[in-house]
Image (cartoon, rainbow, N blue to C red; front, side, top):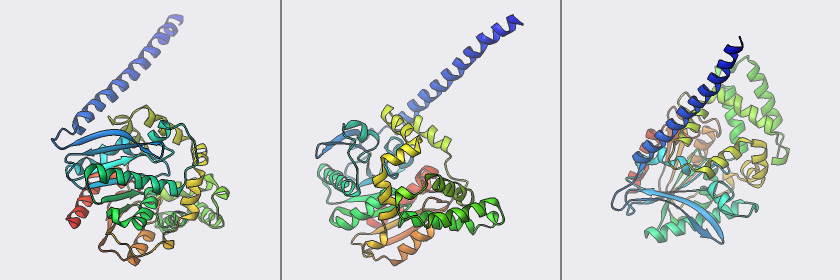
Length: 366
């Protein structure tokens, strides 16, 4: 018996070490393969990660494209404070032959956060100003009169404000999972879940009705229960999310096997896992996102073409709200695209469909 125990004590750690070693090697090899696949080596190509100075702040930006003569598109990530640059090659690779694409980590998050010593409060005015600095940098560096502004989720808040404030710098605005009024969007998405036949007569239906009723009485972020919001979203997901949505494990694998992910990206990703602390750190932006931004407060007349992309299975913002608002706006050109079997982050769920849609938009600009 003692011999068997002793043998097991040797085999278990050896096996565990072997499993860890295989996993590390698999990740390392996959990163090498992805690095080779994503390398840009054309004559006029650019593949760059750098920092620019914005009033003393070091702003992280990533620039990728096969020909710098192409139009420039600036992608504004969501969140608040959820950078996407480290996985951008996964969802934008097919666009890099037609666009020079700039991703950046917004003030107060990701690589920009770690590059600066200050934990100063971040607000919407600063973020719009930062975006303008990135736009001006891109226009100057690549000799462009204007750029394409593409925002995702929270990024559509910044993008909408920017497109209306600085139309002379915008060739078109692309709203990906556009927010109209985030708090109402969440509640209306829950209402869509309640209309699903599969929820009828279940405990989920009873609980979701209670959550919607309770949350409709809240009118400021500090009074909003993170637990209630989490439950509302989790139940809504069960009845709205589509099968094509990338799983959490899939997103994690995409991140760790991306050649662009570094230790700072990983540190920020882990910071986001503590949602209570993370939300508290970004309270000013959360307050603005949930209770102060209402797209109806802005003009319905845009001076630039406007294009909206909505995922069929988006449970985070309500598709009906986006479509209803879209019908009311006036713009030099506009289109509404609903992407099939894709969710809130449609570019992660179905990069091919996302890229095909962006290419269709580009064809309208030529």
